Each structure stands twice: as C-alpha cells, then as structure tokens.
Image (cartoon, rainbow, N blue to C red; front, top):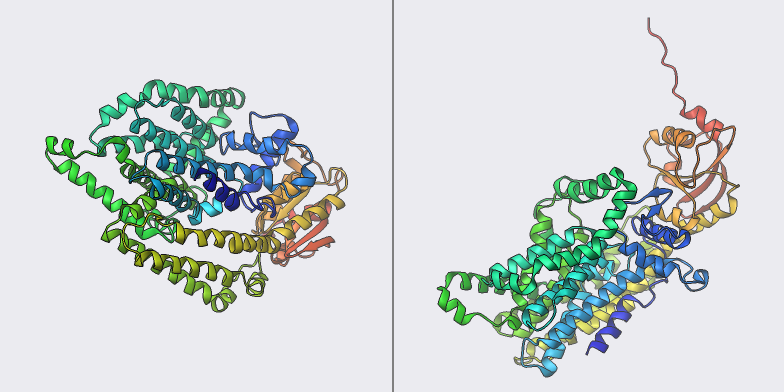
Length: 587
C-alpha cells in the first residue's frame, strides 16, 4: 500500500513539475536565492536581487540549492522550476507516506483491506486538498514546514501509541521544521501536544513519555546553530527583520495589507477540505463530543472508558487541527497558506470518520457527494461564467480556456467521483474500501485537467515575462541598469539574472527611479550619474506606459511581449523630468 501511495504522490506532485515557469510573486525570490547559493557557495545567508533575504530560515534554500547544484541545468531544468519546486513536492509525498504508515501500523479498525483503504484514503484526502494541490507544486517554504511538522507530530503520536518506540526522531524532525519556517513550528507542536494531553486527561503521562526537556535540547541542537551564526554575522539587521518583522510583527500587527476578519480561517477550513468537508466537520464534532463526555464523567468512569493510546489518533488529529486554527486566528496577519499545517490532520479526520461508519458518517458522505455534484454542475456551466474572467495580466485566458475544453474535462472527472460516491452511499455498511473509489477520479482531475490548465495559464501569464527577460539579456549593454515599473514581476530578476529596480504605478515612481539610479548600491548594482551611464533599460506594462508621467520620454522600444514593453531611456531626459519644478512666486 505504501508503494501505491508513493506512485500516486509522484504522479500528483512530481510529474511535469518543471514544465512551467515560476509563479510570481514570491517563488522567484526563493528560487533566485537558492540558485545564488549554489553558484556562489555562500550557503549561510540567502541573497536575492543584490540584497540579503531574511524572510525565512535556510532549509528550503539549501534543498533548492542542492537541485541547482546538479550539472546540466539548461538541458534538464531549462525553466529553473524543477529544482525550485522539488522540495515542496517531496515534503508533501513524505506526509502522504507518513499518514499511510501510521494508519497501517496502528489500524483504527479490524485491519486487512479496510485498514489499507483507510490509510490510502487519509493520504489522498490530504493530497487532494485544494491548498495542497497548489502549494505542493510551487517554490515556497509552506509545504516544507507542513511536511516537517506533520512527520514530527505523527512520530510523537507513534511514540505515545507504542511506548517502546524512541521519540528522539520526532524532536530532530521538529528541529528541521524550525529550520523550514521558524519558531512557529515549536508553537504549533506545543499547542497540539498540550491540547491532546488535556483532552485525554493524561498530560503528565504524555510529558513523561515524550520527555520534552531533553527533546527540546535535541531540537535546538538541529536548529539553533544556523540562527546563532546568522545573528553573529548579520547582527541587528537579521534580528530586526527575521524575528521582529517576520515573526513577532506578523503575529501582533497586520503586515503587507493582509487584514482579514477574525473568522477568516473558518471558510478556509471549509474550502481546504473539499469535497469531503462534511466528513471533516463530523470528525471534529465527534472529537469534541468525546472530550466533553470524558471531562464530565467521574474520574473512575472516564478511566474505565478511556481508549488505549493506539485508539486516540482521531482525538490527536482534532487537537492538531484546532491548534493551527486557534493560533492563526489570534494572529493579526492572515494568509490562506497559514492553514497548510492543518491539512494532514484534516486528512486523518476525513479518512477515520469515513471508516468509523454509522448513520452520521453516511449522511456526511452523502453531503460530500452532493458537493461533488454541485462542483460538476458549476464546471459544466463554465461556458457561461468563464467569459466573465477579467484579469488584465491574462486577457486571452477566457478564450483559451473555452477552446481547450479543459474545464469540461474537469467536470467529467467530478462526475465520475460523484457516481462513485453515490455507489458508496448505496452500499451497506461497513464499506472496507472507504473513500478510495470517489478519490481516484479526483486524482485524474489533477492529472488531466489541473496540470494542463496550469500550463495554459503559464503560457498566458508567465511566458511574456520570460520572453521580455530574454530580450533584456540580448539588448543589455555592459552594466546598463535595469528597472521594471507598473506591474512588478520578481521572475524578471530570476530570468535575467540581473539586479532589477522595481517601482510601482504611482506618479512618484519616475522620480524614485531617477534618484535610485544615482544613489542606490547593492551587490550587482553601483550608483552612477547620467554622464557615466547614459541609458537605462525599463520593462513597463502597456497600462503604465500610458500614464501621463511616462509620456514624452522618447523611449527606444527594443521589444515587446504580451503586456510588456522593453524601453531604453535616456537618463538625462529622465533626470530632467524627475527634477522638481520651481514654484512661481506669488505677490
């Protein structure tokens, strides 16, 4: 069964991994930093676009950099995405295998086919979450954090379920999670274990079994050396940026305009569990019900009814999911990717609830089938709503989607899943195959519809940036500076391998650009005067090019691709336009 899970994981997350370009806006920053590490040999502090990047710890960059260090990149990795995306894909596959192994080793039912299908169902319920299908194939650190944290938490539970098992591997993998995205891994693991110990009314026994003090020392041994080295080398800049801004400030205040209501993660939970959200909600309600009964019963009675450690996995998964929900609900900054660490727990709850049986499970499965039928209907009506898509960066996308027939192919996959679900609902209980018959058509949905759509979208949105980047590489004269104004794409830096000065659409962008060309200094860019460096290359989108402050500069247009234009501007003319105009005196 683990072999089948591995094959499905490779099909879902590795197949065609490098067939499309990097997705703006954040992945090119990770990829460029990792590639720079491999090329320069400077593995301690990531750098991107000529500046140190303190956003995330180094594990994701190290793993990407290992891929970029393999010779012959231009032949087998021409778009640079295979090396950048592989760590995310492998992290997701590792979670699938860990979920499958846990349910095979500690079956929640009678074993045999039923346990095998429950294990496969949990792995697929996790992997087919819309969030995992997306973040498992992009070059950021969220999937790696999810993978390391999930493996660590599952190892903790395995050590609780089987006291003879060593728990030190869990603490070591937790150290890797801290190297993947920072102290948040410690907080989420601590909240999960604390909630589980309280819910079982066995916090002391859990403490003695997991031995957190020597365990945390082992975690620190794995994670702390890099933090100390970075702090010693970079000093206050690293402390202020990484800990102050990217950890404390993100939790206490809203950054980057990611203001969301306090209930934001409730709809995220519903969407991330699709199409089996009803089973997830039922699993949570059952866990809460067990906790209430356990705490309301007399001590002797609750001890007599207490399940063995191996039967507590559903409660553990509920604590895990609620830990993520509570922590990030309290955080001021909220993003959909923050929910990813909860998705393995959601996969466990979905599969265990489906395997548990009973009238409520059957109704929840029926509601899931209804959701699949609704999605089939919505996708079938795509010729009516696709023309309403209006994205200025992808003006031809609606027409190309309709011509491709990919959305109708997606509808066919959901129709198959709906029929399989109806068949499952009609079959008498228990059903040894669990959710697997309804999940396999959704695997086809990813392979036959989502990945081709991804490729189509890349051709519309990503290819123009890659084309104009190639035009830059051919047109650039020596150390001629490069800027991008209007729509900002970090992938331009990645594909040109040049420092790019980015400015937005505001009228002050022209003034800022002229000033930065004269004063800004970073690796790969030195300040220069218009006399020393008379021209600058500017990539500008057609909407920004029509703004009044960019008119009258007499640009030399060197190329165009999609929305983007490549200009060569005379810096003396740019400087005159940027100079402040004298205010006439009033008498």
